[in-house]
Amino acid sequence: MRYYINKVGEEKINGPYTVEQLNRSIDQGEIGSKWLATSDIGETHHMVSRSLSSDWLWVSEVPGVVGVAVPLISRPAHAKWIHYALVVAFVFLVCIFLLIALVSVYNDAFKNLQ
Image 1: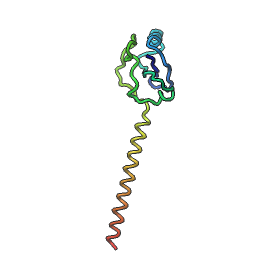
Image 2: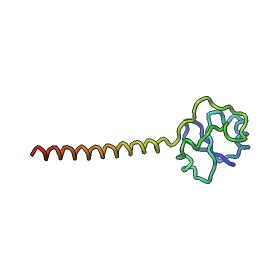
Image 3: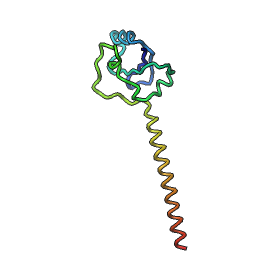
Image 4: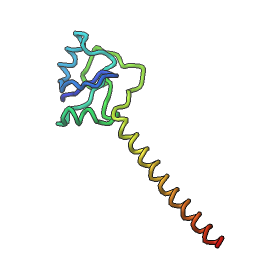
């Protein structure tokens, strides 16, 4: 199995690497506890960079990786923009429906006054 890796707070995606290559990089101090990993399933670097946060795990959680401690902090979210876009779209639709309902109520009230 091969893995892409990413240091927390950085944009660059590295890899894919085998577990042996990851262990060597850990031994050499190139990779530490604040690195994330995701499985190589044949996606491009661009697709990997847009993957969901649930697709990423700490490098220390990769089966076979040794020599690095599990961080005490939770994993950062990747691809937050997807969740943000969905929330914005939902709020926008609710506002449109409320506006339509409000216009309908005012039109009915105006007709009743005449």
